[in-house]
Amino acid sequence: MEMRENTLEMIRRNMRQAKKSEFYKKHYAGIEPDDIKSENDFVKLPFTEKGDLRDAYPFGLSAVPRRDVVRIHSSSGTTGTPVIIPYTKKDVADWALMFKRCYETAGVTAEDCVHITPGYGLWTAGIGFQLGAELIGAMALPMGPGNTDRQIRMMVDMKSTVLTATSSYALLLAEEIERRGLRGKISLRKALIGSERWGDKMRKRIAGELGVELYDIYGLTEIYGPGIGISCERECGMHMWTDYLYYEIINSKTGKRLKPGESGELVITTLQKEGAPLMRYRTHDLTREMAGDCPCGSEYPRIDTLIGRSDDMVKVKGAIIYPSRVDETLAAVDGVSSEYQIMIDHLNGKDILTLYFETPEGDESARKHLEKTVETAFKAKIGLTPRAKAVGMRELPRSEKKSTRIFDNRY
Figure 1 (cartoon, rainbow, N blue to C red):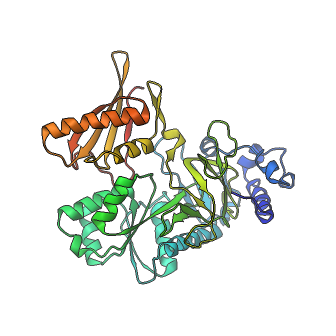
Figure 2 (figure 1 turned 120 degrees about the vertical axis):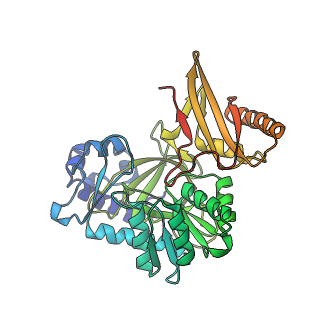
Figure 3 (figure 1 turned 60 degrees about the vertical axis):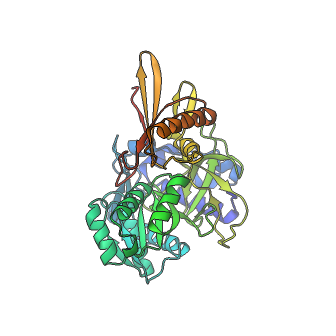
């Protein structure tokens, strides 16, 4: 992303605020904001890692007095020390404004009823969707996750027009609505989907079965939460709110900046955050900067739809496997659904990768032929021959939150 002079001043201001925290006093010891006179000076600053944030638990990231903290959020991870992010009143208001922009970009208005299924509590998702909906004047329906029977009843009775969900739960709802024959009774017209990467086949299934326009919404707890970027109706990347954040795309291994169009890891620096400002935070999300102006006319620059995470990668027999590459492989095979699961085991001194995939095909010989087709496609695309196993539709588990697709049982 191009760095302008006003952006550089905002970065210096952010760094002054960040250095009020115990963490950045140590992390950037000997480096002062006024030392950052150019983009070249900025890229020499050390990155901030998630491990750093865990080590700062509980309040090492806080850059304001305790009395100025109006809310605490925490990362949704289930392992390790949690990451605690304090928010000031301004932080909450800024987040709501960004979320309002997301809804506006998606064409949501005060006439809509927003059906909110992401979780509430310490996680940022549910309450973020609610804040933005209320700010735009829409009717918020704060359902939270789970209890699919109640979700569908309220969706029908309240005439929900906008669904917010993870892609996994959106698919579960779509399948259940289709199974119950309720497609004609729902009023959904749009869906804002976030929290996990998803492939084209899943996208088409959700859009087709629910009859909605889909929008990718982006964010992470460390940087406000969801709502810091969203796709538009042109479906050519996600617009990022660059008056609130500065982003870079780097090579995950070398840390070097990449050019627009080159895929790498997204790094974010906040520009207006008070409670827990971050400098050069490595998100581990993989994407690329999209050059040029968007046909929609938005002035905000774009990153591409996420292709995965640098820490999602697994290596089997020398082959590097990302979920996104598996998505691409299966998307090219007719008769294969969007849903799959990979099991990696170590048996008799060898690594074994088993790929389960769903198919509507019921004939046994046709399934066997499809398994061979998938094995051949996987070998050609990824460089490894799996044990492909065809299963019926809805036989693989569904999730109300994020789906786990790769299980590495070797360790």
